[in-house]
Image (cartoon, rainbow, N blue to C red):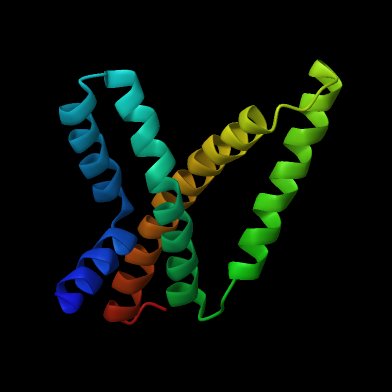
Length: 131
């Protein structure tokens, strides 16, 4: 059972788009609300995209950037707090955290796609002896 669980988690980290789809389908079946299901799927799959981007970078360039990813997310958080404070003059942490998390999803989703395509082409070029 532990082996199956670790394989499932590994699969979801390597292919976070499936995580996004699976969570959406399950939450849609349970809640019957399309918008809520999309938000829930985005929120849950964000961590999988972050971890997947880390492992893609690690496999392409053989270096760990996890600390830089954490610092980057914290910088996004600081920027969101400052902007929220400038406009609202009172910080609503729930809204700020949601904004940070959703922007992180967007950035890491795009990074995942770019790194996946780059990694595939790099692997093909290495196999053909072009690099």
